[in-house]
Length: 470
Image (tube, rainbow, N blue to C red; front, side, top):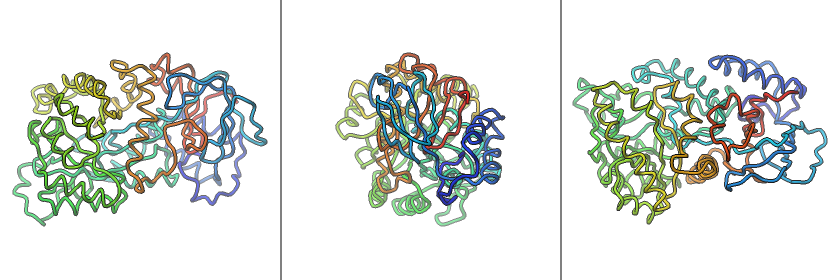
């Protein structure tokens, strides 16, 4: 009932009756956030869990993740993990759990395309400390992420493989994770958090703590790139993440520096293509973006300092641009006078301009948050999505966070750990669904308060939250 995958329980009938399942799903959403996943694990152990029962939503208005309007009142049948049937006519579903929509909106689960599951609740110092502690924090945050309506995330840097496995096996509730594994960086690149006492680096020498735990890893030269990218795919990465230019949070990585050479970039792309997936590249400046694109990178993260010619190049090459409407709280949270705050002051004015360029040249644009080291900011995940209305209609913003982001995830091809349609409400799609009080196409602020407005949260056909009266 609370896990993402039921295979490990043998698909036998549950000993818990339907009313018990409904009550327990409501109780999970009511207990303190940090304890929810522990409660879920306890319930999984104490009750024989089976494949989800058939569930019939009746009288709902559907936002399908593609269009700009809600459907007529409709009925949606979920069988197992899939949306089986959608009809404006009554659906015969003997024995199904019936949920009265009463005109509420049924929409796809939300997708965050730029997430760092292991780096939300920790401080920068803790991120490379006790792995057990950081994983427990990440598990609690994963449950809260799901309870905000985010049923899928693309993790673009961090040791999230174990967390993903625990979620997939139903040990704890959380979103689907498309992991990148360790960020691939170079000496003094974005993601190199070493101190000067770690220098000089000796090729083939001992790894630093951040490399050992898989947060980021340093490569210098095409051969090291190939080895480290292969290692991430060996562990289950769905795409590779490299840092092609300087970054805000890294103290020794100036924004103007193009960090990877063309040969190094092409080595990463070569291995990703061998694995039939793609490379996502962190890059701000025109030089870094252009070199990455011309080397075969399929997705640019950020791009906030690129010029118009570079935006045109992305459109011509059909390259994705993964953007984030970074909130002021993120910039102001950096210490005044720090090198990180100084770089943030340079980046933030480019956010609006880059969104304007993305619209002007019709670049394939994904949405994400890029929250780091802040549980408070993570709570604003839905509000950050709603802030897209600076540039888009509510419908356009919600399409971006559902159907469009799902198209980006599909670039991982056979490396996709969750085959099936995501981000849409249509027959045959995976049943990741939100039942919303109200119409988010008219009032996108509804997604900023998921505790109040998301009455049902379903992932893989399993109800994780249900606050409707029995």
